[in-house]
Length: 259
Image 1 (tube, helix red, strand yellow):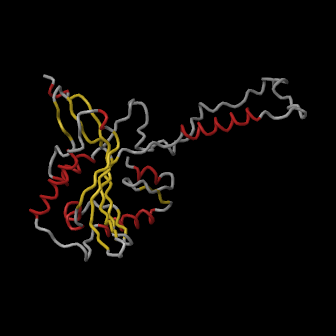
Image 2: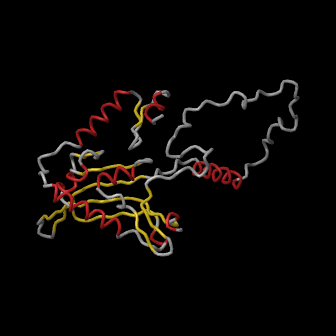
Image 3: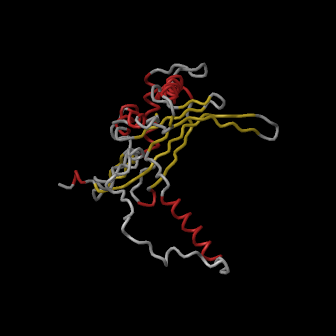
């Protein structure tokens, strides 16, 4: 069951890519129209020949693979940015753009979920765009999806347990035959001053609980385009377009080549 269909049972409609939640189906429908409009060619974009688009794809793959190092110190969150025209970006990612911001002219694509790697393989025309192999059966790759650590645990990327009702078998009513403990029902001494250290401990415990229940960030690949504009002391303006790619790098043993 998809996120959108499951959340509709709870009167919530969620975009599967960006995670935006709408109270009505019409809100999600308008959001999808906005995504469709983001993939319409604008006056600032011109048609490129397929050969030029293919060269842009190879440049993208080159910059991604250059960040895939053998050492573990290079693993984790990575941001790649290099010069790219708006037309080059649109030529490669047309049909997969999720957001367009008219005020700035920026674009954003979101690739998330179990099929995100294969989707980008189709966009870039290369199945090995996000993996690099090394000696001693090592490989470094772009992390596009993370399986749950335990098959019985819920997937943190799929917030499917938000709408679960409590188990009535686990909700126990108090025993009417059990007498209350008089020592527990005594009122606190009005002459006793509150302990400031105890109050501070309660605040720290509350903050720790809030940190523990924070929703983990989803594993996703963000690819966008933006224009940078600068000027000198004489207010002479110069600008250029840049493509940026945010992703996570991981490493593992290449089990397939062990034998």
